[in-house]
Length: 176
Image (cartoon, rainbow, N blue to C red; front, side):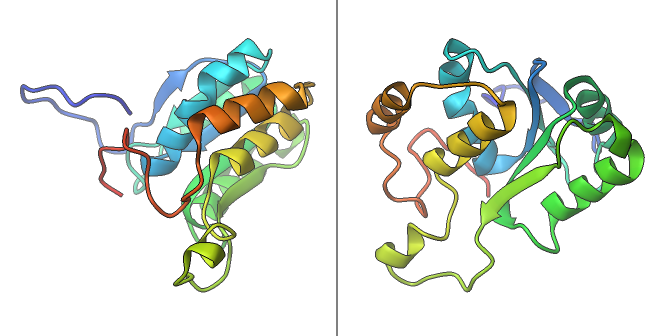
């Protein structure tokens, strides 16, 4: 996540990056879904939710240690996935966590991503299929156990306008 340096640089394959340190909930994501999560970060902090956000950076191999260490600290896991939630990255991450540190969890791990339906061909159907800021924000608030004023949430969501959920925001520079 973030700007790509103009000069040459290397990223270690299989090593995730903790983008934001926190204590309330671990959010694991990557690519465009991570951009959506980061768009919500300031609002979450202002409203008393302190998430630890992990950018996977690479999917195979996956950095189990970074994920496990974070969830040990927060006791809560939300995976925000770019794809369907079944048979994919989010399912694998949840398996890793539940098989490794089940007793450290304060509640059941959760995942959100594309609904498990055929990809829609119309805007009207698309808004019920893809991730969007409202869906992500509602899930984070619910899992955190914190209270957020509905009026503050609606004002924030209206300000960032996430109406076309199958089109990335202008701040997303790719790749998918």
